[in-house]
Amino acid sequence: MSDVIRLSAADLAAELAAGQISSVEATRAHLDRIAAVDGDVHAFLHVSDHALEVAADIDRRRAAGEQLGELAGVPLAIKDVLVTTDMPSTSGSKILEGFRSPYDATPVARSRGAGLVPLGKTNMDEFAMGSSTEHSAYGPTHNPWDLDRIPGGSGGGSAAAVAAFEAPLALGSDTGGSIRQPAHVTGTVGVKPTYGGVSRYGSIALASSLDQVGPVARTVLDAALLHDVIGGHDPHDATSLTDAWPSFAAAAREGASGEVLKGLRVGVIRELPDSGFQAGVSASFRASLALLEAHGAEIVEISAPHFEYGVAAYYLILPAEASSNLAKFDSVRFGLRVDVPGGTVEDVMARSRDIGFGDEVKRRIILGTYALSAGYYDAYYGSAQKVRTLIQRDFDAAFAGVDVIATPTAPTTAFRLGEQLDDPLQMYLNDVTTIPVNLAGVPGISIPSGLAEEDGLPVGIQFIAPAREDARLYRVGAALEALLVDSWGGPLLDRAPTLRQAQGPEEGNL
Ligand code: GLN
Image: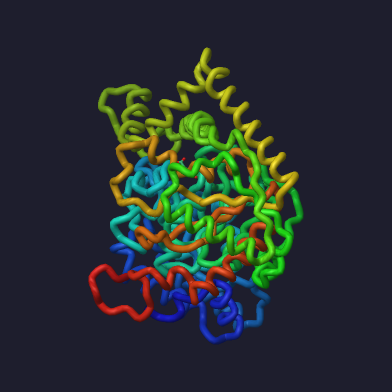
């Protein structure tokens, strides 16, 4: 494994700027890595056939003295939920197999504009529905820590690509946890920005009031650098905030000194049940809290009585919005069309949707259509919206007394492929601590907090901040990350048996 692929995006960017390495060399190293390991990991659905040309162009522009963005020349993986003109965009679904978008999603366009080099499109649960990437129509992604285990979902491809050193950075989307939960199970960093902080233009919609695009990385600073590139107002997205955002990279750099922890009030939710959390996940969470406390933070118990109803409310609001968003896949305008000889247009539509959508997507369309139907609307969708407001109020009240809230990112470490596939409810419960964050529209970050003692697999800690205070998450995340990496004697990923740098040719190594 060459050293180039193990560099953080920030360090690679510095080497590129200093002329110590070219973007072509960096890009080739990542393409070689993809060729070597992606047969096992399956993080990518499509690998770009012109990444080297894009990289060469950046190298030429740099040589010509052009002023380039900080991340110019750094390779990037893109979740297949984001549409791209030069590569297919399927959202993990058969109904969009081979689909080419006439435009780039704004986060993609901004990444290209900043000189990042798209490597390819990453695997995901179909239409971002799931927590394991097993609902992809193109087969699952495997967790680089243990190929028999799930990489999380729906953005398992982006997280696995970054964890397996196939890409230093990736774009993801998070509707109920799809950036943060994969970060938790793969030992990477994932951020769900404040709702409206990053444009959703060109992000194939799952649930429009919950979806947010965000960065996936191996360090907090790298996530911040990518967030700086993709964030900010976009007139193409009616829900995009017009705020002038501070530099998140500056916040991460400031946080790394650890000073920010002095006097920081960290809220811990009293009602979060201890049961349901794997012992090693709870232990890692408590150890992180103790570390924060030892460095000057104050741990404050807060009450968020409606937090636990998040999953129930979400599984009414999400299917309702999803069933409406997915109605456009009608086999007429784009996507798969299955002919029915002698059939009507309705027959063709029904047959195409039957063949084009997987089971989980159908389940949610049925649920959503039911929840929105006349006579049930108030009882289901209306009630769920009220619960959503109560959760938002819980957060507002909590943030009157604390600066951030901390939770474990997910209840368990990576489970085995197939283990929860036939149990949708169990699968839904993976997002018990991430979903309320989307319902409230506030930002959340997951950073690696350690390994669970019982299985040696990674665990993440989630920090939540008030809306628009994303910079606070980068400060606090970078501060804890610095302390933890110091205590481990190096990044958590170095401790993955499959990913160790000086590895032999043993079975199972990547
Ligand atoms: N796992 C959750 C779901 O299945 C979250 C998905 C997401 O954030 N896109 O809906």
